[in-house]
Length: 267
Image (cartoon, rainbow, N blue to C red; front, top):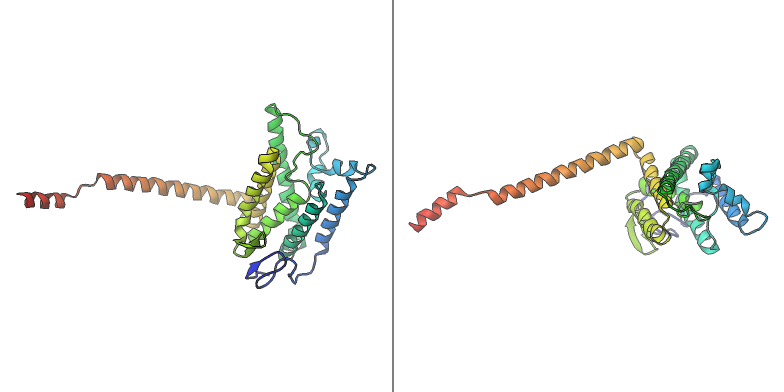
């Protein structure tokens, strides 16, 4: 399923990602989209609005609502119907290729591990914030990682990991290597989420979902990835130190032969 050429929303270049992809729609992914749409719709009716509230990730986990850690990725989030549908469409585009590349079992394991891990990280950050004296969060708690947003973070990170050298047309016009979406996801969460809404716990949840997805699809898992990063950081530090030592030695070198030639020329 490895394909070349630019991947664009709507299928561009040679081979197709998005609407032009020849891969069939996985029933599992369609089921996820239906669940997201149904729970998103429930919030607009007085008789059912409590259901998504009870299922979304919230500080109520600290009071025993632990099922939210598992349920929250499948509860539609937001109030704007247009943006919600657009997010579902993008989730379908990325999720379809990731599903067929990984298979049903690995796909669900990836979603479960990354989403639950992200929720745990976000809850730990929120607990630390409360211990530090921060005010309790309201209904918009963890808004950066609710529902389809955490699934988008996971599937896009999975695509960026599996097809790192593929080219995606960002905003339909800007060609970007897929692997850069790992960093773009975090950048967008920081600029459009953390800065305006101060959702610190949600931001760290997004970062955790991206890291866990990348590490789970890389050889060795999270521990091996952290080990490689530590070794790479140590290597760069050593190279910088050696570079500084070389520069210092160059400044202190005296060319003895040249001094003798100059003295002979003067005399």
